[in-house]
Image 1 (cartoon, rainbow, N blue to C red):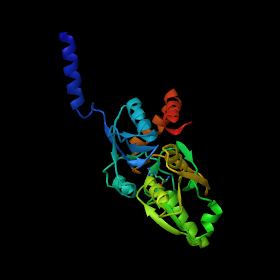
Image 2 (cartoon, rainbow, N blue to C red):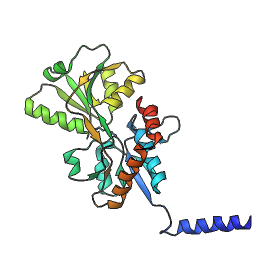
Image 3 (tube, rainbow, N blue to C red):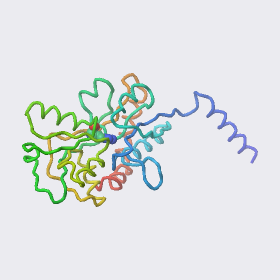
Image 4 (cartoon, rainbow, N blue to C red):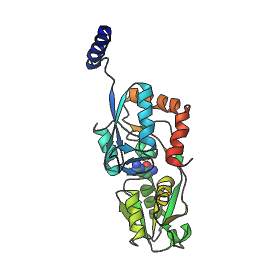
Length: 247
Ligand code: ARG
């Protein structure tokens, strides 16, 4: 018994010494991007495919992680300002972002889709050739891509910007916009949760998701890449896909 207490006391002392304490990294997440990252309504806790992935990786790579909900549009500035250390939250690897941050190896690929009300007849061709209102999430790769494409090709739609994909879905349902462009999984998530919308078709090339980190954070970069490799070789990776992505 006495030995037990000595051990506990020793562990407590060691944990308080910086060299022995586990490092804590903060993962910035979009609170409203199911199924990759969100704040669970019932528990009030961060959840999702990416949140659980990084929690597992931290546990198996010997660091602590906390998940901090932030506005998506300001998430890279928050990373550069060291309010957070990484973004594992359905972030597409893009050349524009790669100028500011470094990405992990890609861990997931998603298509971009047009979402319309369930009773809509709009096709992707209609969406690109009519004077409709098209919703996108502010600060996303798809918002930037479609804006550029519109400038180059002169599409007649009017772009409307939202703080989250679910907010765009709400405006689709109340008729403020006629279509929205988003990643396929959030669209599937809205449909699975009984929102009366459907996918009208895919658009553009698929995106690859990666974890964003500051360029000088070599240590974390290594932990994250090795951690994902480990996770992908573990049965838990399939479990997560089943739980969150219906795969
Ligand atoms: N894939 C798009 C992007 O990287 C949309 C991501 C939105 N993800 C999120 N967690 N809000 O910009």
